Structures are given as structure tokens and as C-alpha cells.
Image (cartoon, one colour):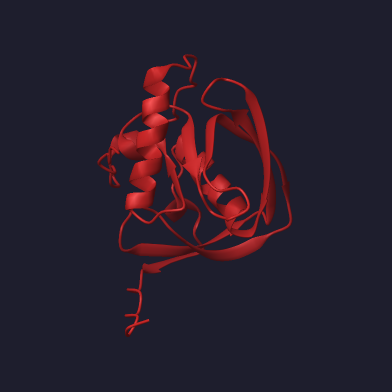
Length: 161
């Protein structure tokens, strides 16, 4: 298990268009493994390679029980339907949250860790996570799209539950 340092805004790598992955090798597999470990350690639902300082088109998402961990290399959103407005946060922008308008349902295509084509369709939180992470690959942050930005409230204590 390798936890990587999460890059914080305003680091320049978060504003770059990430480079396409052309080599599907052990280095990519380690990056994907480390990104998943880092995302879970930080209690996130998604992470893009630029968030760990690597300008590559790689994301990991785990936003619903149906799909579990999704690894996508060179992802592209190929269709969008509907609309949702809801809160988003970002591991690279701690302490802030914003209301962002996103598609309700998206289909995303990319490659798995071996270069094989994969496609997923997600709704609700999964659709939001796909869009948020692909934005990272294009240097776009949720604060650029948010209709309002505010301080994230701390989670209430779980009185013995």
C-alpha cells in the first residue's frame, strides 16, 4: 500500500491538460494502485493523476457499490443526459465545497490498466465523479464551475454509533 501526497490548489499541475497514456506497463499499474490507496486513505470517491502530481490521463473512481473501484486510462465522456445540481468537494481543495451543475447520467469510455477498451454508464454520484475527475485531466477545477463556493462543514460526531 503506497499513499501518495495529494497536490493542493494552486499547484500548476492541476491547471495543465494531462498527457495521453501510451505505455501500459508496470509503472502505470503502480500508479493506479497507489491512486486507489491514496483515494481510499483520504476518504475520496475519485482521484485523477494530476492530483498526485502526475500529468497523465488516468483516473480512479469508487462512488457506488454496483461498480466498486473503476480505473480508467485516457477517459472520455461520450454522452450526457439530464441535469443535477449538488455539492462537490475536492481532495486538492480542502475545506471548500461548491454547488456544481452536472449531467445526471454520463457514459464514459477509456482503457483499463492493460489497454483494453472499457465503457461505463453512471448516474447521480457516479456521473458526478466521472465528470469531476475528467475535468481534472483538462485542468478544470470544481471552483471554476461552481454556482456558489462555501466552507465545508465538519461531519457531526457519531455519538457512540
